[in-house]
Image (cartoon, rainbow, N blue to C red; front, side):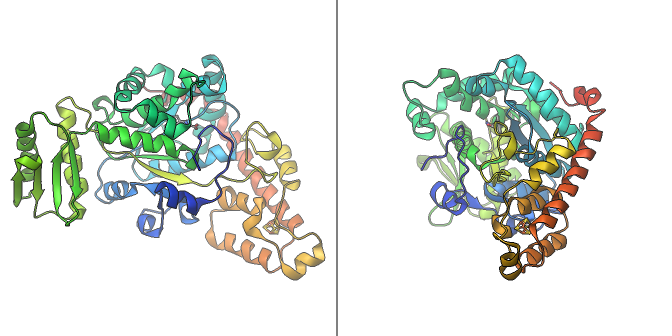
Length: 439
Ligand code: TRP
Ligand code: SF4
């Protein structure tokens, strides 16, 4: 199996993704201490992560950390797209600085749109809705890939640490692949890592919240970030914490610098072994790795190297389309667009595929299947924030107390309210766009 970010598969087998690709489970230990965990977190919609530990520590220690995510301006914004921005708004509320890439180059390269078309879509479909949904302009910037020179330069420069075999193996590119398409993941790596350039805030933990289809890009970015580092801070097999130098040049100088940093951090039991290009930090534990790594990254960066801290990511499940397949802009019946009129949304919901039994009688007797019901997904992802209320619907469905007709009606009413609210808030969003488009 291969994860293909440009296909329309849905990847329902989430535990397999964890086993096969090393995505870690985003279990309660990671999020229970976050301030008011978001419903998408509490309910397991965000099911996996890479390197969230770094983010957790930054939050706990009140250190700066960043969000970087991207939007694909290739169609209308629907409920599936809303999910990411719901997450981003939550992270903004708990102190992250927010960076949003408009993937206009990627849309140009992979979806055959002109840059002009992507710009219109980005503004009128996405950015305006982001503002309406409550994204704040403070500590937030939205930029276009095509207009950001650092991102494009990084895409090119960072490409030095990857090769064609790796790109083929990761993405299935071949001799017919269009080179603009081949280059898109490198631009995305530029997106993900540029927030750690000095101009954009320097090295700091960065979280990339995405759908699981984006994992190949996450792996590529993490590989490339690490490949540019001069130091590797790690726990050895025999449980020691060591700082290792990854290059063969300037060993002495690099060891001196690491030693200085370690002393500054308060470690005193340092064992330097030049032949191993290593310093063992005997008074450090696994918990100190991040602190040491970040300090060294900073030193690397301040001397003109790319001291990137490996980006972290969370992965969310995809909301099912109303027709039972993937929710997709190219199939309007499958999706609820944020610009749908309340009446259109109501009709889509009333006609949607549920987990109900074939006859009313049977449903009264055996109950419905909320776990296989797209109406229930609407409640779970978007419409009901109160866990008790959601649980009640779940139980009433299972016990045969709640019938699909009523249930859909309830969902439709909530959806209409939500869309009306967003539509009202969209009204003065156009005037505010420039507050978000910072250089
Ligand atoms: N490739 C992403 C998509 O298809 C868009 C994107 C571009 C992105 N740059 C990014 C996502 C950086 C996350 C981080 O939707
Ligand atoms: Fe879905 Fe509601 Fe029907 Fe249960 S009662 S199957 S949740 S629509």
